[in-house]
Each structure stands twice: as C-alpha cells, then as structure tokens.
Length: 101
Image (tube, rainbow, N blue to C red; front, side):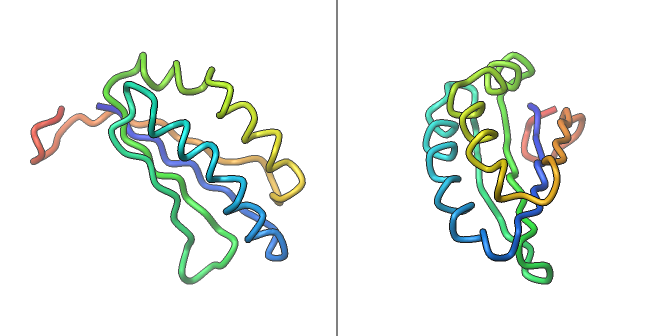
C-alpha cells in the first residue's frame, strides 16, 4: 500500500474557491480503481494550509493517478489560488497493524 500527503498553501481570500475546486478532483480520485481513501483536511492552527491524505493499493495506482485528467485539471484550476506549488510526498507502507505492508 502507498500513501500520499500533498500539502497546499492557499491564499486566505481564496479558501472557499479552493475547496470548491477540490470537489472535482475528490470525486474523480475516489472513483479510481486503486484509490483506497482520499480526503482533504485544513490545518486548524494555520487556516489556508490544506493536506490531501490519500491511500493507494499499489505503485501502479499512484502512477495512474498522476496521469488522470482530473488531477491535471486541478493543478491548473488552483494556480492562482495558492502561494507556492504543492508539496507532494509519496510513501510506501512498510509496517502496519492494519494488515498492509
């Protein structure tokens, strides 16, 4: 299993627009065959700091996700809403009490 953590810093005046733009990528991603979970979070101590936390079946599913049109469209849609490019980190689960790894 793989996880992705994508940290995105959004201009404070653009928070509502960002959340609205996130609806399409969320729906599209959750429909992908290899997606196990996908959620958007906002930091309670730093408004405008968002985190997509994702769980994926395998590396092939992660690679396919990055080629999906809804992923590419989201990157274009948020260009003017963010203060810097998203920070995306991909992790392989190597140990877990949940049976993966």
